[in-house]
Image (cartoon, rainbow, N blue to C red; front, top):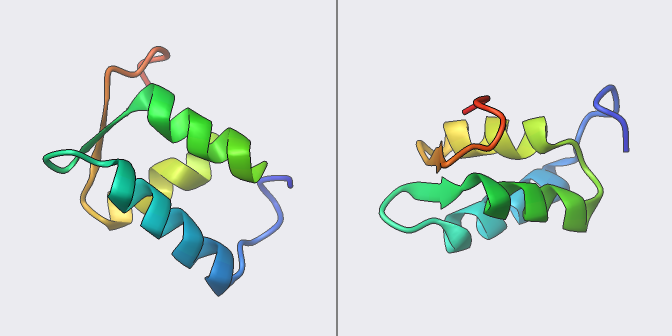
Length: 66
């Protein structure tokens, strides 16, 4: 999936559930966010956007993006 392809509401809901379940104390590790993106074949930025929507911080980012 390219970043130009919008996510469906169903895809967004699935990502929200995965991010929420992976988060601990409103934080998710960057490696965890990347694993979610990779498992769903979506850009990691989409996972970051949804984490922001849920007020979940991405920590220990390897690239300094979050």
